[in-house]
Image 1 (cartoon, helix red, strand yellow):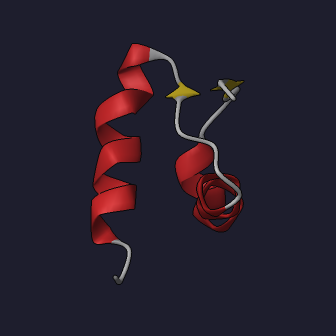
Image 2 (cartoon, rainbow, N blue to C red; image 1 turned 45 degrees about the vertical axis):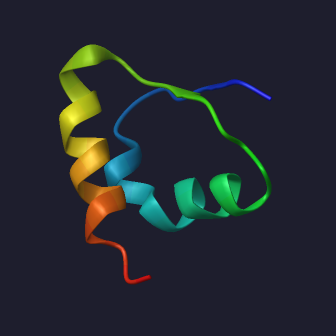
Length: 46
């Protein structure tokens, strides 16, 4: 289920994590935020 992310989801990484844990596998973010979002995801504890 693709989800479009508006704004800076790195400020709400708990919400983004929740979406991913619910089975969201594709998240569309503006290119300027993509690297920062990926860093946020990478920094999450396993």
